Every structure is written in C-alpha cells, then in structure tokens.
Image 1 (spheres, rainbow, N blue to C red):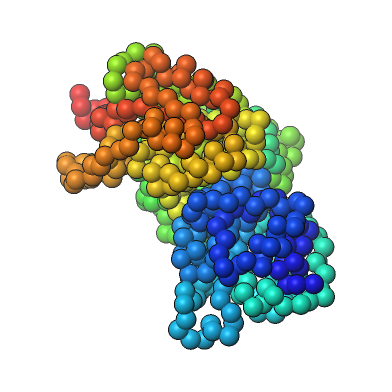
Image 2 (tube, helix red, strand yellow; image 1 turned 120 degrees about the vertical axis):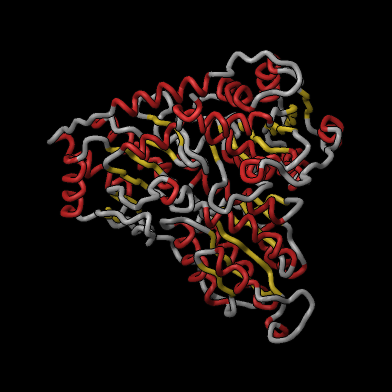
Length: 552
C-alpha cells in the first residue's frame, strides 16, 4: 500500500477521531488517503492556528489526541502558537505537517525550513518520517507520548516523496499500560507530615482535573475538611458549592485566597505545574513546608523545595492517603479558611443585582454567565483583562468546564476552542468569552463554525483597546501607552458570517440575552460594552482587603 494510506490506517487504529487543518500541496497524498477514512473526520479551518487550538481543546476535554494539520513552511509556522499553547497546558495533540521532497531538503529550496527543529522546543517529541516502513512505530510512539503524563504535543512530518512510497507494513496494535504508583513508605512520611499539621491547605493544579484524580480529591477533602485553592486550570476539581472550595489563586497581586497560604503550616500541592502560578508569588521566603504529589517529580526552584514528593499516578496517591485516613481520622484548625470563603463569596455576589445602563461591570457579566450555564456546560476564556476576571469570579462544579489558557497564554484561543468543544459535547451549552482584541485574532473561524453548524455562543467584551496591557501599565506607571483600536459593526459582522447576533447595552438584559443565544441553533455572537474602570478599582480593593490598616 501507499505510505500515506498506512499513515491513515495507523491513526484509525489509535482511535483518532478528528484532524483540523489547512492542507497544502506537500500533503496532498495524505489528504487523498484521509478522504477514504470511515472513522476520522477532517475539519477544514480558515487558519492553521485555529486548527491547533481546536485540537488542543479536543485533547483537554477528552484526554485523547486530535490532529492539527498544515503544510510545510508558512503552514507549519502558523501552527506553532497553538501547538505551544497545547504543550504547555498539558493537552495531548498530534501535529501533522507536510514537507518537500527529501531530494531537496539539504539545500536552499522553495518553502523549505527545518520544521522538526523549530517544533522541538514546544513539543514532547518531533520527528520526520524518512522510511515508510517506520510509520507504524512512529505513530504508535507519538500517540503514547502525547497521551502519557504529562500530556502534550507531538509532531510527525511526512515529506511528499515518502508519502508516495509503497510499504507492506501493518499498523501496530495500541496497548495501554498502567502508570506507576507512589511507594508506601514515602506515603507514610507524607501522612506523618499531615498528622503534625494544624492549618494545612491544598493547592490544586492542572493534574487535578483528571476525572479519577478529582474524585479522589473530593473524598480526601470530605475526610479532612482541608480547603482547596485551585489554579486557573484546576477549576472544578472540587465543587464550587463545597465548603472546602476556597476558589481560585493565581492573580499577580495578593488576594483573599493568598492569605490562606500565608497562614498555612503545610501546603499540599496536587498536580501542580509551576507555570500555573510561580511559587515565588505564594512562597517568597522559601520557608513553606510542602508535600508535592504529581505524576512527575518537582521542578527545581529555590521557592519550591518540597520535603516529600509523592511521584506517581495522582488518583492512586490520593486513594492511598484516603485509605490511611479511614483508619486514622485527622482534624485541623481550619476556621481561617471558612472565614476566607465567606468573604470571597460575598465578593463574588457584590454586583449580582446591578441594573446599569451603558458600561457593564465584569463581575455582573460573570455572575450572569454562571446563572445561565449548567453544571456540565463549558465556558472558555480567551486571554486579556477578561481572563483575570473569569479566573477570580467564575467558578465551577465539575472539572474541565472552564477552560483557560494559562501556561503559554495565547490570545485568539476562545473562538476555535469553542468550536472544538461544540463538536465534542454537542448536547452541552458552550460559551466562549473574548475581548475585542483576542476575538479578532482568529475571527476567520466564524466561517468554520457556521459551515459545520456548531451550537456555540461567543461573548465579546468591547473596550476598544488592549485592556490587560493597559491595566498592567497603569499599575506600574500610573498611566498607559496608546493601546486603542476601532472595531467592526458586530451585528453586521455576525450577519456576514451567517451567525445570530445580539447587542446588550444594559445589565438587566444580559441574562435573558445569553439564555436566548444559548438556545439558538447554530453559532451566536453577543457583544457588550465592558466597564474596565473596574480593573483599577479591583487593584485598589485588593490592597484594602490585604492591608486594611493602611487605609484607616
């Protein structure tokens, strides 16, 4: 058979369901082979970056890799931002690129560049197929690496001449393995540290949104009452309505949840990636007692030096601790955590009843979003000032129901991500939130959404500028540079792409408009004028909350 046929058969055997992308001349053989597949769906996108974000969200929601495809040269460079985002946020992904003939790779030639070398820093593995007979091994290895903890992106490059070669090799059968588990002796040491603690707190990271890990974490918290501070990416690892949910940590400045870590005598980090919230922000003196529990050993850092590391399958680690707690229940002084939760809950509800004309407060928008979305519905955040508000004010009942890019942190994520979420869970309500800057970075994917008919809503917060940069500059310099831009007529834009369109100009109409948009068939755009005066107000308020005596 032809090598490209074998490649597709190997992907089918691995259970690959979707490939998103923009084909080119150099992967034409692969596309002809893919067209014959009965199980893999190819989604034509309008830009390779959008394809990568779609594959990322598929991976984050399912735990299985999807493919994103581009040709050589600019097709590959267009993929790289979304690939880096996926890899740093621990989403499994297969990156499939074409390449020119191997007869011209050694010299200057049209669109030729070292794609493998370029992708090596942003993938777990990157390779070129140089022998058609190796395709089964390469695909098997790529999928295993992409899925394995910590998940990430893997690149396979298929040159155009190799794709045409004949081969008689069959696909390899996928065989799964069980992850290693933590040793009993080190688990006993961790339990002894827990026994000696009076005010422990849990810092939950990306690894906790795996279903098995989340289940065991909730059982652990039911046994102990210990509160959970979630990073932006761990939202929903415990139910927001649980008394041990201490909401989110991760803002650059101190916030109410930060005080819980300040007062803790033991920090238990679970599935925590340093890229989510650097320890120098919560352990600046490097003196916190830390138990590190994760699939991999801790990153070496002066502010993150755990006394005990529980390295292995995270769900099993929590299960092992729960087994010990069943035999020896522990109790702690957690009144400060209960007090913080009450204060933070009041903060979240402060503007729930806003009834303003014109600019709408971020707090009100997110309160209404939480009201209209069910437990399993999904909210996706782009990157910008709105991301900070979503991180602080939108909370979840279940894992993977609020998706925020927080490692590589790329703008342009929410629209293509919402499209993928709509494909994975067509029965759920899907709401993407973007600023006017980030939304227009991948606006072309509005056509993709309309063409494939996904039911999604994109909520665009309009402020006519790069609001997060302005916020950060004002905090540091008391002013900001020129960051303003103009926007299209949003309703005309929606109509041009075949979307439903809505404009909300006052707080009281927001909730009803969102409900109507979420019930519509096909994609819908909702825009509103956001009151980013609240950014500086929040900065000032955090200062008052953390240092009440300074303003007396």
